[in-house]
Length: 210
Ligand SMILES: N[C@@H](CCC(=O)N[C@@H](CS)C(=O)NCC(=O)O)C(=O)O
Image (cartoon, rainbow, N blue to C red; front, side, top):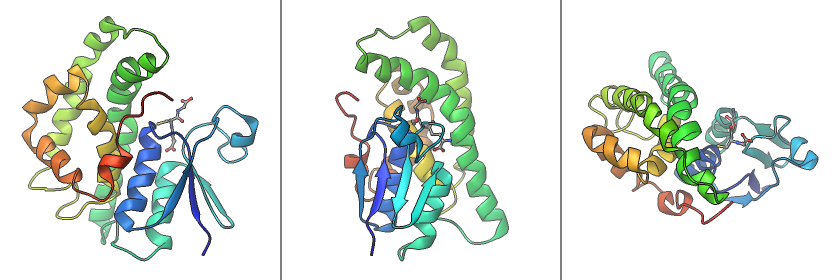
């Protein structure tokens, strides 16, 4: 069978989501680093974002599409719940990750704390401080949403968890995460449970530079 290839950088939250979907499903893959600004890469992802997927004749972009393909095209534990309400609930959490969590944590906190550091720039502490209420709000929503857990959609990890975990595991390594997350014990326990999923540590290690 054709090899599954994920194109993108190891640091990218969405690349890590796609890799987690492969690992949770038990699907072998190759991670291919790319110059995501190059015209060659835009043939795979016309917006120049990461990741993209190649698998034989199949070429995809957008992480939810990629993760859904990984779930449906291969044998292995299902990564999406059955039933209308449960499936929609999972998509609700994916959307929360893509929108509110990404805006507060990735675009501000991880950009200031990691990406600027990769570029040799200091973090903008004022920007970080003014975004703390936004970070607290979204973590509060995750905490309330975990309910009886242990995962976002019940007793099995789904794509919802694979979208949220890569963001929170890096957030936990920032001063803002270290201050906010202890006030969210269910989220902290969920993150510990996610750390036990296949290859989690390897996939979510922080690279030295991109
Ligand atoms: N909607 C896209 C978003 C992908 C995305 O924004 N990826 C980030 C990395 S986590 C990226 O490529 N950033 C590069 C840039 O913004 O120039 C998806 O779901 O795949």
